[in-house]
Image 1 (cartoon, helix red, strand yellow):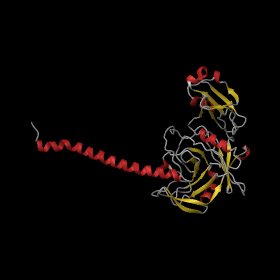
Image 2: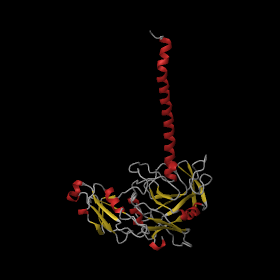
Image 3: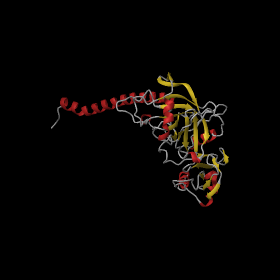
Length: 355
């Protein structure tokens, strides 16, 4: 039996029309959300740092195993690469980590060197050399540059790789595990406190290398904190976001720069970007601007290279700086708080027995 053309046609096309209307609505919502998020992220690059590159950001710090390409680190051999081969640098790195599982003291091996370019390495392809440094904060370098076919990385054990960010309000200690962020101080440090950071050399090796270079800069002139914003009524004392509160301003951070006057700064590639948590130390973009977060910022969606972490018991110093006198300013249409008097920083080594 035939259908009524008038009744049946609308019935047949109704689902398609509804589908098209739904797709159009989703498109409009997506475009709006993308615009808002893009604007927010652009502002955050001024506020607290925005990486903008998703390559290689797939793992949380602590799970990754990375090194620096075109670099051959030296040191006493623990495992001979001619007899110890793998298919990837990650496997070589993990083999080095496996020799650093103790809870006390240094690692049996703290350096790995891998040759992964089949054409350039020739018969040395796949060699994984595990080595031991005399000084983990000043690793021996055999060679570096585009002609070097080796990839190298560092691993730090308990009590090793401690650097300090010294200020007049105390010393922020940073412990290097894969990266080595530093500690800064100023000449007139009256009563030092200790702020310890866990660093991630296996996740941010280029960041660690930069911090190690800063250890050779005697005064780090120009290094300073220049922006400070507390948690306000947005986050609790543990850094948890309060229900129905905004996400700033204030943005719960202290921000500064690690660019020393008289030195040429090379941009640091975007490395692993875990969620920003209370105590995270991260670059803004490719540095040298950085910040220490006073709260958990999941809304920033893994946008920043995290190269260190302040120990919870040491956050009192960062909080103290965050409550210093500030003046309001506007950066890229975002309200910020700038310190009336910047807080100078200096990076220095920290002895093991002070960690």
